[in-house]
Image 1 (cartoon, rainbow, N blue to C red):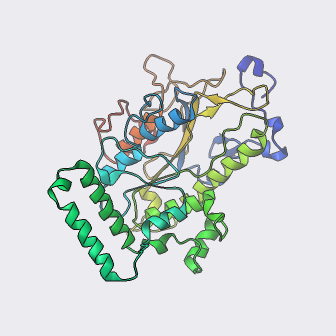
Image 2 (cartoon, helix red, strand yellow; image 1 turned 180 degrees about the vertical axis):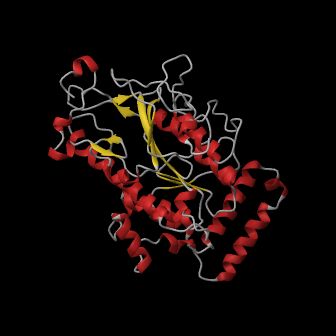
Image 3 (cartoon, rainbow, N blue to C red; image 1 turned 135 degrees about the vertical axis):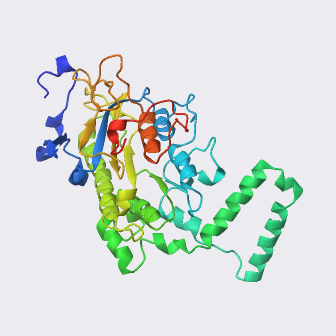
Length: 389
């Protein structure tokens, strides 16, 4: 409601959006903005965490706070990524225990195998997992491998921590390139399986198509369901740092593209059986979608929005109690509100807790059975988010 924004300090600006696109969408007793997209079909599975305090207006610090669950030291990440910590606990038997697609990844204190393998797109991943031998004769390859193994076994290499990590990474690379995984992610291949993937996720059979949110979501799905990894971090879409009137034209469609990609991912995981168990992959997967912060409740002088300390995230999956909203922003200026972690309701008493990204990461850690704050996040889980808390 724009009529009283001078009192509430909240200026929706829906009149700047094109026509019917400004409608509020209701589903499952919850209300969403006009660009929530197809993810609204899965409202029974998802929960929204609102009123999160990011304690920063900087892109890098906000992003790294959410990735690690710890406030950065200046601009430097101060801990391992949540994905790295989870990968270290979920095991090293997968080809790529921790896959990071267009996402920063940090390993400060976890085993080397849990470090994120970082790629920018599907093409980068194919280069990493497909053998690209510079020699045509197998004998030459064998001689090179024997020489590398001999060097790794020398005394100098054995007492070197760097040498040990380098040899471990080299062996992991050989394991990946000899596993035949390349065909799993060859989304441009001329076969029925890849045509079905392109159709479901809605991307074209060309290199531009591989750079879309749909293709990135498809990569995450294949990596999980093929057993390549247990932990995937992916930037689905970007271009949200708008501070002028163009937000009305570009922010919504870009957000919708990301939400639609998540919806396709949920549908894919929900329709694929998990290891001949009768359950689906979605019954064994948790998904979290976040940004480094949100935007101001008031329009600026350019009719755009600037960075804001408040934020929100979307959580859904096997362990998540869906169909609910956790927390809230205030009715005056959309300030973060403290909550009761057991109920998820606003609690303005001294017992109320200000929610930060580390609460969400701690919740995921709690969901896989770990207690007593092993990742040193120093907060409790949001118990209201979990089916079995």
